[in-house]
Length: 417
Image (cartoon, rainbow, N blue to C red; front, top):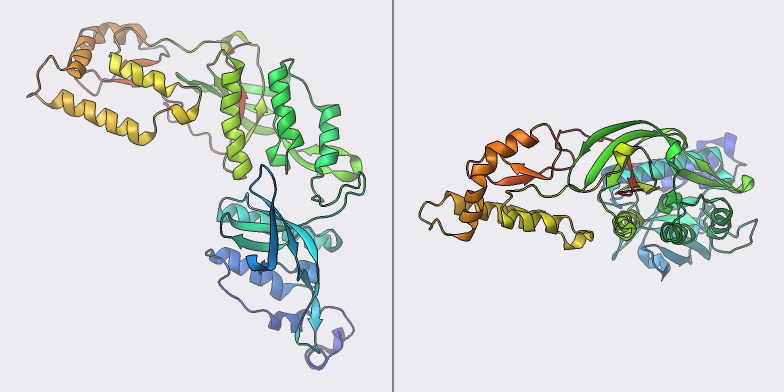
């Protein structure tokens, strides 16, 4: 780099295309985001860069012409200015690679996940500058923060405007030839749709044979199902290796197997679809990798019936909580208000004993000793709560023993073979 500033400050790099000592003084730290860690990271990439590929920027949304990707929260965008190249001493501004086609990825739902991803990409750009994939971040008013990702033409299928890390055209062909089949057309068709529309490895769902799991151990079970912890030998799809034309897997990893007490595969798929949609919107919000089926007898079970003596009002509430469509289940606020109202009714001695709610719970009291003795050592759907004399029943919840899954991920097991 030949200019007076470089020559006076660092004569040894006068002939280089990038002068770290000089260029570091041309960047200014701003509060680009509401997260200080993100701001510090961006500024640090700029002041320590040894070439333009090391620089990450915050780019204002107005610099992009946005085009929404169908069935996605992400965008394809035309970036007129383009990414930063070098300093123009004559014009006193940055030279840029103009007219770039980029992808704006909005899936990073929290600051920590966004910063972690940016740091990983920065390390990659430092090791392989020519293989740089990310230019920085922007903020889209309707979506939030978005990663600015490079788009290229695939060297194999020549499909344009694809991510270097995930060519959907090549990926679709790969899954057509290599996906394992469950033998159930509904499951296989559902998975194929997620695979051919995937924008990243995190969007892929698949059928996983039961023999890929070992060290199976029951954590707990209740009315909705049971949860097991296990070791998945192969692990999830981590990335697409373009030169090998295959997917690379994470390898052996701990997972949670969520066994659903459902007879109808349509109900199972509805549950998985909810997890999948959450994952598409926000990477990292919920990791569901697919469906498996384990044929051990102790895994094949039905949802238990409501025990005899449960008050009708509570039984009705429980059945609503079991609805296959999560959106039709009562939310936490409704449950709280309903239970508080019952406690209020049962505690009010001024109410007539013929009050319907009081009658239902009162009729359950004589059955309490019998139920306690009969079900004390067993799993069941409901029981008389020992803390409340009016005999309010309670449903067993997924983690009723206080076991924390921690970083375990989820794989769904249908209710029966």
